[in-house]
Length: 414
Image 1 (cartoon, rainbow, N blue to C red):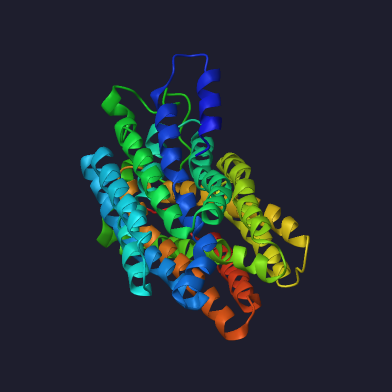
Image 2: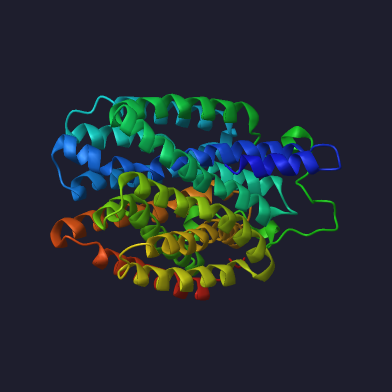
């Protein structure tokens, strides 16, 4: 959530407080909760030890989470476009909370899959409602707003990773799940009461919509309300799906397995959790800087820069045997974080604002499937080879594919 940064902007505004900054803060809080799911890797070894399964089987539960989240994102996106933000946020918060509390009662592996399925039924909203809502509230500073909102996941991982690690050590992984369930419900309930889907409902205009500052866009807003059948017939739609799939695959490959990888090469569990948090902590300035810079140089150019850096740093990860892991965490965290904010801006610029939550819900299917593939693939590669190196090569190849697709993607033409 970069809630502190959003609050700082609010306090330094010279004009009367624009309600969009409050909406941005609440959307960032919703994104913050995704840090819990990014932190699944911290549960990987304890759950595997208790249930007696390998990392491939346990990490595949997260793959189920990603697939179901993709489907739920479609329904939550369409529900948001039709009925506003309050009902989807309440339903999602309730489902996530129930699922997390049920995880504290897991006794066999099928329950892990089932309960994470319940969690994922609500989790899909995180990547549809907040980015769509923020882009409707901001014309000027849209890149900054997207950077702040998307940094919520990074801040969430930075803060929650050491907290979850401490809870697991102090109690166990079961109690930790229950505590997180209560926490999520409080956040989502508060967000449901605060967030308004667009400024018109409050009798306002988007921030910067004063007739002098045009929105950063590559597609004519008047020609934007594309329907699903039309989208399926466009190259833009399929290239964007490829970008989402192959950029999220290495993201979750690292997120779910970096903690285990770090302990495998000799780091303590506490240090491994710190490295995990460092990646996502550094992603916060990356998301903010990426959104601001890409708004000026172009969303596609911004993605290409991230792809080049992430490709080489993942290849380097196959050779790391010590303190170099800290360097990896800083560099990779910054540029993978930049990609997150830039991709949201790219999708908005390609498809327009009118039905953006619904479009994000559809396109995010590819991203979630990529995350599912990355998290489970790395687990099975390790179980069969005793090493993550082949998985890191797959991640590097994925970034190359993202770069190629980003080069060729074009805005929709009416």
